[in-house]
Length: 436
Image 1: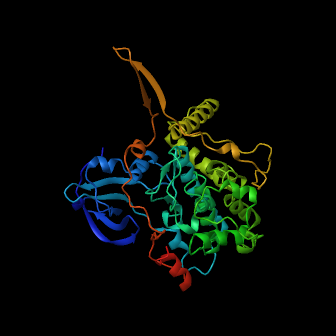
Image 2: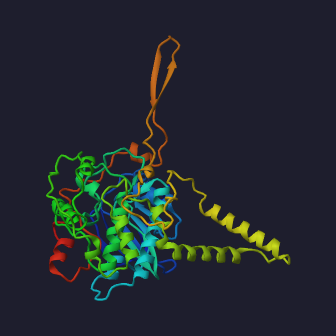
């Protein structure tokens, strides 16, 4: 349960940013002097139960602890005013602030490291049945080269019923299925957003900076080309978008990202696949050869951690090696003690090079069907038969039981978190103007 705590424990030092539903402040604990980020909600809440049923709080509690997900320290709720504040660990900056104003490109190894850690956080979310829906550079925080995913206010359960909210995610990172349908999208939208973020931090400029929905899909077509009529038929659940797109071959990502190596370019292309069914999962991307060096580094760090935690070594080398192997196995089991809530396939075994191509079929990576209600029949004393529907247990009870009180965004006028801008005035107006 959420405890009622006073905001008087913290000293507000300044404002870091503002979003549609909240503002982020920098604060300091009076007790220990530590610095934190305070996310203060603009909405007022009637009771603690309402607070506990917030998806963001449920999500952060479920996903914690994880190295690449921001840590929730405590929840502060003022009963009299209905004010809610989340005390979160404070990080140095976000990825947008890392690349703003830069004249020299980040190294590919640095970009690879940032995306690898973000994918680990995303894989952890998807394994636990949650997808983020708002992946962008401002929501990827950084401290001492450690990346942490933040802002879970838009997250949803992968098992919740479609269609979802149409105007979700920031437009520049919105997947085609989110643009062309009335909310018929899945967790695969997060992988498209990761691809857009990858391209942006590598090129220091947004990949698809559309000024509206039509301009957004047009910019996508100018780069990766117009999809086939068969693929467009999959998206014809929309009532507000004209599907008579003029044929466009597309310049290709190689022209936009010409300074990148072939392997990095191939990775961005595998994430920005138009068809969501062909898009790989976060787990598959992490197992790609492109991230092998980082995976090996993680394994060495885990072994070093387990070795330090081991008791004094035995005189028998064989016994010590056996114990160390068991310790590593126990560490992996402890690390993955949470049950998987969805099933993902392994890498394509026929592809020895583990390189993604557009011909690889990932259709088997779709999640299980949404559970349906079961009907039970009972007989009363007077002989009548009563039928009762029983819903299956859900990972987010409040998602089905509580009505979402957040106001729907009108015309996709969502403010982006972050107070710095790109050098070009036109991009500044698009990124921070009323159009967003």
